[in-house]
Image (spheres, rainbow, N blue to C red):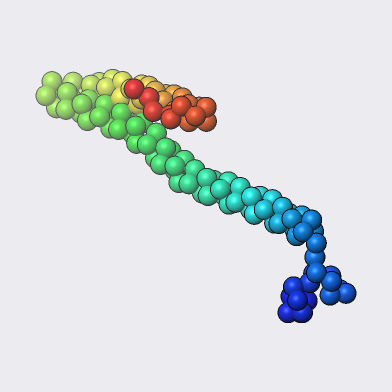
Length: 126
């Protein structure tokens, strides 16, 4: 109602001084900046959650691939050489070790890329 009566912010209807208007503008600017920062943090968090799921899926697939390749090679060796079940057991264990090694390597790459991204160097590894 006061805005319709000459743009006054006071109850008496007197116009606001330049200093009061500047103060209100500064306060509004600070509130807008704070809101923008909160939204940026929320957006980063939601993006990061999707990225985390992708990284977890990659680590799981690295491990499963190593185990399955070892099992398949062991089964094939047993069929060809007739050494059942020793080829399957041996190469399954070797596949498990390879899967663990792949997961450790990928996790190290991910953590160093994340640290580089936080430091502002881009996060790309050669």
